[in-house]
Length: 351
Image 1 (cartoon, rainbow, N blue to C red):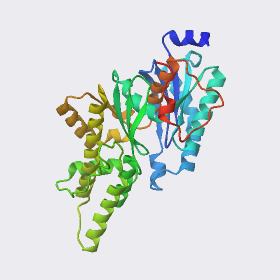
Image 2 (tube, rainbow, N blue to C red; image 1 turned 135 degrees about the vertical axis):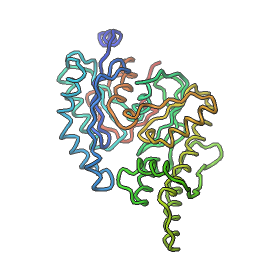
Image 3 (tube, rainbow, N blue to C red; image 1 turned 60 degrees about the vertical axis):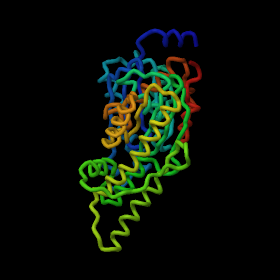
Image 4 (tube, rainbow, N blue to C red; image 1 turned 180 degrees about the vertical axis):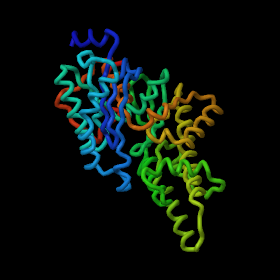
């Protein structure tokens, strides 16, 4: 352990990171948790578009097909020799178990072959610390995580310490967007299409805001999704034609208002110095714009990663893994894929 600590304390550190939690295969090399030397991403969108959503078995096979070549190319593009890597990081969870297994086997193989430590990394911690690739983080901080599978408010009292204060009780934001998009006749993935239509709409179909209990930081999207379907069905029964863009705008405004209000309220209550927007839905223009406008009005500092670090990527995994690497918190080689990995339990053990 003393030898490992000496390596950790001597700069610089180069982490090879692997991300295969869902339908993007990504490999990156990140220096000192901040500087991205390479970040390759192979998207499976065109493959899954034919099915209207991600098919887990297909996703796993696609990861297997490209992971070896991407490991080689990521190292080559980084300009770092394999023997100079400090550690190998990989998304351990949450995610699709088959997809996670592909990345874990590849990362273990690299770590064993090169004689490097292995760092199991939390996918959501990666989304949160994607902000660190382009910004300085200040604590305490509040993270609003919005993605296809997650909608959460996460309080960070200090670096790498996570406390979940709010989560979705049913559909995640990205999941709800895809379901509404399907109802509006948009192809998969539907989120970008709904966002575009909402921004172009001249009219709006009013839809309910779901606030839940007073003071709650939880979210619920299933009722709003059902409200959209009811509006469309009722219009069809009356022989009326609704403009899809007006429905998209009504849906997006209902989602965004609740997200923004609860996030700002959480920042105030917990005394956070920054609000971090994270996850694939952080690329949504309507949400980014509304949150920025509200934070400017409230005098709050808002951090949003560049578009390339919003969706799943390995650079964000390298940034989060550096938290563990700094503290010598290394995974065992019998580490397993964990689709239900807890963010709070993954928190760093030492300050």
